[in-house]
Image 1 (tube, rainbow, N blue to C red):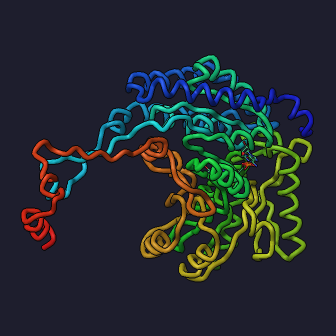
Image 2 (cartoon, rainbow, N blue to C red):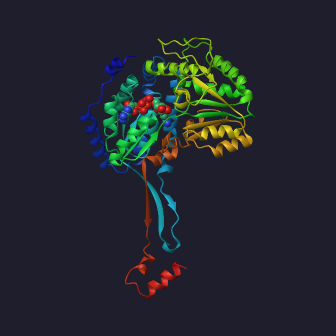
Image 3 (tube, protein in one colour):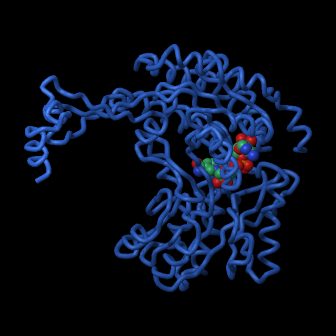
Length: 477
Ligand code: NAD
C-alpha cells in the first residue's frame, strides 16, 4: 500500500491531545497512588473482555494491514498470547504485590526490612508493526497489574489494527486509565519525549537509540525490546531433518517477520546438504502451496519486500548460492516471498550484517562447536539463540554465548513461557518484561527499614563518649 493511503487511514493523535491525555493520566494517578488488587484485576478483566469482544475484528484488521496475515497465526501468536498473559498476571498478582522480607544487619535487630512494589505512574508503550496486538497488550498487562496508567503508541504501518485497538480501549477504559495513540514518526517522537515514569519501546535498534536519547532528556527509565540477528546452532548429535522442521516453522511464521525468528543457521559442515534438503522438505510440508496459501503471511509492505529481494540478489552477485525452498515463485504484487536458503555467504553481504526479518535462511558451516560459538561471539549479543542438541556442545553454547534468551531443541518457545523474563542484551535490548520481571519493571521496588522501639541507634548518637567507643569497638572487631 502506498504511503499516502496508509497515512489517510490514520487519525493521527494531535500533539496537544497527546499532552492533554498524559496530564490527565498523571492527575488521575495522583488521586489513586496504590490501586487495590481488586481494581487491578478489574482492569485486566476489562482488557480481556475487550479482546474477546473484538476477536474476529482483530483478525480481520491485522490481515488487512499485512495484505494477508494468516488468521490462525493471529489467533496463536497474538490473541492466545495476550489471554495467557492476562491469566498469568491475574493468578500471580497477589504474590507479586506481597512485600518481600529482607535480612537486617545483626546490630539493627530487632528492626525489620522489606521491599515493597509501588506503581510508578504513567507508562508509555511504543509498538512495532510485526505483532501489533501482542506487543501492545503484552507490556500493558504488567504495567496495569503493577497499578499504573498506560498510554500506547501504535505503529503507522498497521493503521487498521491501530484504529481498532484505540476504539477497543476507549470502550473498555477511562482515558485516564489506559489510552491508545496513533500516528506517524512525528507523533512517535512527541510521544517518546513525554516525561513518562517508564517507557517501554519495542522496535528496531536504530530507532531504539533515538528513543533512549529522547527519554534521557527527562531521565525517563526505558525498557528497550529491540531486534538483531538471532542464530540457531544445530549440534552434531541432533537429527538434521527434525531440526530443519522446527527451524523452518520458527523462520516462516508470520512470513519470517518475527523479532526472535532464527536469522541464520550454523550447521556442521558435513550436514549442510542434508540440512538444506530437509529445509526444503519441511517448507513443503508446512506450506504445500505458497502463493495462494492462507496459512502463509505476506510481507508487510513493498519496501520490505524489495529489501528482502535485494538481500538475495546482492548475496548472489557476491558469490552466494541461492537454494529455493519452495517451487512457487514469489509474487511481488501480493508480497508473497518464496523462502530461500543461502550458502557460501560472507560477512560483507547485507544479509549477514542486517536483521533479515523475512523468509531467507543463510546457512553457515562449522567444524567443531567452538567455531560456532566464536562466530556468535564475534557479533552483537543476539535477542535469542537456539541450540539443537545435548551434551558438552549444549553446555558450552549455553555458557559461552550471551543472548537475551534461549530455546533448546526448538525456536521461539521461550517467549511463550509467561514465567520467564523476556528481553535482549546490549544492542538487542535493555531490561525485560513478562512474568514477575514485568511487574517489577513497572514498579518502584522500594526498600523500607522499620526500626524497633527498642532501637540500639541511640547508642550511636553524639555526644560520642565512652559508651559510644565501647559499642563501636564491639561493632568494628
Ligand atoms: P521501528 O523501530 O521502525 O518502529 C517501532 C515504533 O517506533 C513504531 O511505533 C514507530 O512509529 C516508532 N518510531 C519510529 N521512529 C521513531 C522515532 N524517531 N522516535 C520514536 N519512535 C519512533 O520498528 P518496526 O519496523 O515497527 O519493527 C521491527 C523491528 O522491531 C525489528 O528490528 C524487530 O526485531 C523489532 N522487534 C523487537 C521485538 C522484541 O520483543 N524485542 C518484537 C518485535 C519487533
